[in-house]
Length: 164
Figure 1: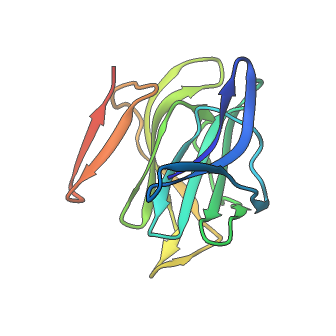
Figure 2 (figure 1 turned 90 degrees about the vertical axis):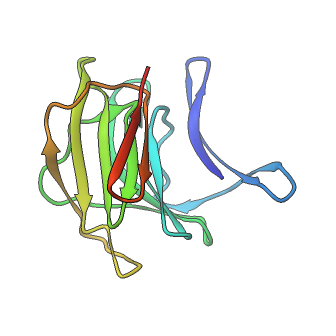
Figure 3 (figure 1 turned 90 degrees about the horizontal axis):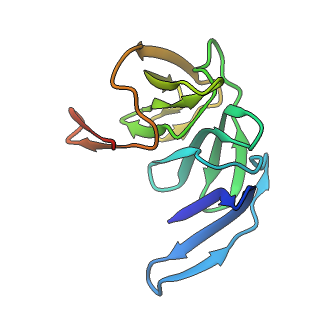
């Protein structure tokens, strides 16, 4: 399990940790490449067994809409350049890989509204290869408004949204 960022008091963190589940021990890692800025309330999802994609978050001054991919073997970060329109910057959202697309749902954005929109990042991966020219498109604009929720995919055709 990998963890990036978070918050300690009012300070946003940019540290990077892994949990070795064989011995249940945490280790701080040093990544390289296009390192993400310190943030909390970002969302991330695994792409297969070697990569993690992270979207958005809050840096203490502004909501973010950037996309980073981590190679979990080399520990290299890449910031992706996204073509077309982007979802509004947000934090407290979910990011869930469903087949070849990253679904981004809900959260809180600029000015503080809680969102209920659902976006898909397509062109991120093709036949197991990371592509570097992805684009977002809006799927739905008014689902339940959710902040700090979870999404689970069950059998690729059912999506469970858990919110409080």
